[in-house]
Image (cartoon, rainbow, N blue to C red):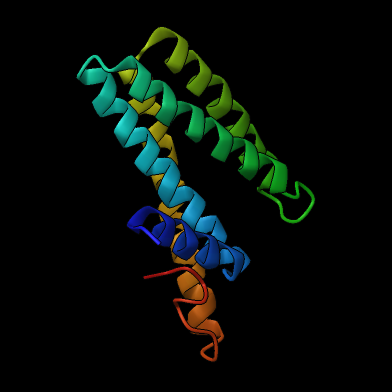
Length: 138
């Protein structure tokens, strides 16, 4: 097996065995990474690379929206509105090659990423038998 195959296998195993909290945090981490890469690609004039990152970011936002139970808690409907806004903004940023719009999306996502990581830490503290790693927090 070559390195790429080993890496793919590792990622597949990590995703298939991850807790829901870990998966959520992994999605947010990758979303922020995609947005950072898209910003850099646009700054360098690499539209194809930016398109790839932005398309992947759109896929992540779609997955987050599809798995959100809007009846699960009070803020879920508002979070769905954020996901809808992000999806629209990412398409616009991609079509317009607008690095500022990508940055605005990232600035919206980063506090959410931090909030979910903090929530996982709080659960881990409340349930000490569960490890932080199990909850997706490094």
